[in-house]
Length: 164
Image 1 (cartoon, rainbow, N blue to C red):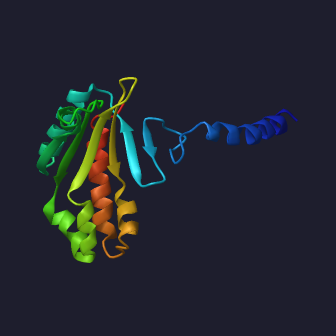
Image 2: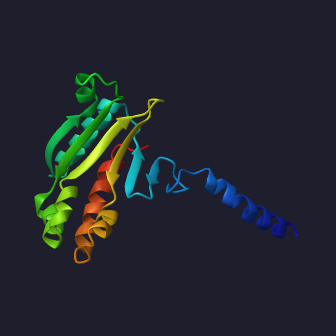
Image 3: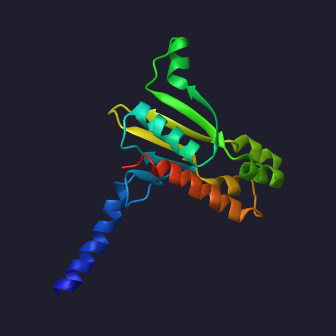
C-alpha cells in the first residue's frame, strides 16, 4: 500500500517539478540547458575573463583555428550603451565546417563556430552556442551525420572545460 501511495505521489508531483525547469532545459542539470530554439547554455565555474581564457586555451590545445573575439560590451560602451560583460568567440576547423557548406551553401551563415560568453545580473557566467544537430535540421543537411556528431562532441568538450 505504501509503495502505491509513493508511486501516486511521484506521478502527481513530477509535472509540477518539471514546470520549474526553464523551457527547453534538461530537468536533470540546471548548469547545462538545451533550449527549444537550438541554443545550448552551459554555466561556467569561473569568472568572465578566466572563462574566455580557458576556452581559448582549450581551442588551441585541440588544434582548432581561433579567428576572433568580439567584445560586445566594449562596442556597446563606445556607442553609449551599458551592457554586461559579453564576448563572442569565433573559431573553427575549416576541414570540418566546409563539409556542411558543401551540402548547403546557406549553412555558411552558421560557420565558423560562434560561442558567446556573457555575465548575468547575479554574476553567473554562461556560454551559449548553437546545437549542431539543430543547425543540420535548419539547413536540411542529411548527408553529414558523422561530421555533425564530431562537431557536437568538440563543442561540448570545449564547453565542458569551463563547466561546474
